Image (cartoon, rainbow, N blue to C red; front, side, top):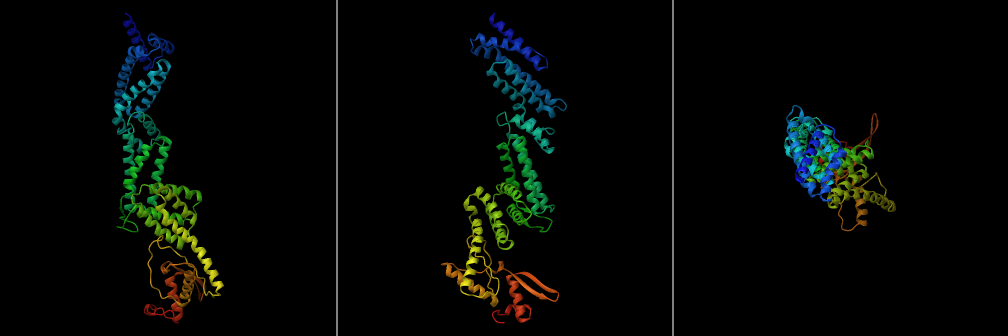
Length: 459
């Protein structure tokens, strides 16, 4: 009968396919022509082809690869090369479909292979103690990790186990960095360096072997948000028992970076990008801002760091967090610039008033809302200093309205020239130290009782 004839033809063709899958050679041109007869019988409709050939072809394919999976996974060493075999099988079935099957068969054939070799053994392959995601990461087998990714991304939710495994792995690596800090093996700067290095390592892996997949970026983010936000306590080292947060450590790291005069602009740009990426994982970003603002204030007022470098990081933080987050930091930079103009105007004011300046007197006017709260002390300044302070107040009051000056002596410095037996020395001291030294010069007595009770306005 006709049905029997088509059934016999189908069986012959399937035997040829089985022969080819087993490594034998077949005539693909004849196969294509013979399989094409099923389409021709349907008058170019694929119903007969689908029912009388493709259905049997897919059934045979399922049985073949189900057997292959069982054999490959259970033979000695088979787990190590399993994914390479899967990769080769998918390529072979794709070529087989393109060479002699109808075009509509490609997708169902590939889906069949993916189901039998990947989806049905997802957990077993991913969690294999010798060839799964963890040992591949342990031994940094990046090509094999890339192969695992490229295959399991083909099936629905196929990357979920891999991303979870990498998330836990990164989290444990981060906790190990925390432990090294707590044990006193590394200091705060090295702690941040190691967190950045760990981040870089996975950035390179994601880009080079995992197509920069958002799934793994999400896993890394979840891992970092766990360990980077732990409050850690240093058991050894310089400050045993002291609890610190990553907000403080990262701010101090930035402080050291800004003070580094040897770093090139390109190096700084690269480092700041990495810092902002790490900053994104910190939960208490307001705490980081407070630490950073205090340290930045000292850099601007005492260390005299490069304002362009400061602006660079502020700009990156602004892009990440928005303008309100960086408004105080930007205000501090503005104040620093305005202080230079104010100083110039003050000098012009003194020259116009024919005021004789006895010393090089420089001020910096800070807007209260921008800067950290500084301790305001009452200081009975020596006459030579108080006279210049009064002159500046007179100038400032003449140029502003409703603004009150409060002197923050704790931030002041003075350069004093002293003559000793071995020659002249230049001393850079705090404002308080300068006042004490001036008192000694006035009274010739350095005892605390005398200094504390002295009226420096009288010699």
